[in-house]
Image (cartoon, rainbow, N blue to C red):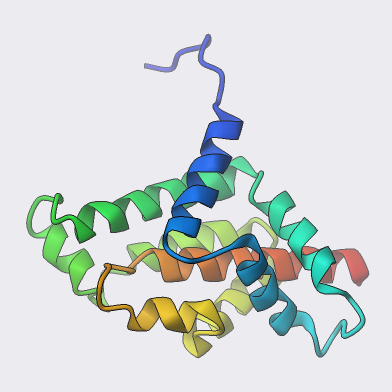
Length: 165
């Protein structure tokens, strides 16, 4: 039931996502660096601090937070083997036909239009920066987090592209 008196916990949601990413070794600066790498041939003079600022801005959008919280929590639950079967095995094995991880990420990237979506496809294929580390981490299930980091970075890159177009 929709509760008209419920106030969305913006700060708690932001802290949840940032803290969960940091627990997994991903900082705001790491995401900003991926975004900068994506945009550097188009906007080589933009400094990293601008990307960091835009990353913080993107991480304050509820749509970004909602998708990130769901994906990060599913990875945590799968790592702890707390999901019901067959979902546990599907997520644990990052089954290629699952696609829900990319679906959440595309929801995030799409907030910034077509450029967000096309940049996400590139980053998802190339596994840039910390995304590559997540992809090879054998201690955790990273089915969602690699796509979440990529989607946030592509949203930042799209935000920069829109601003400087």
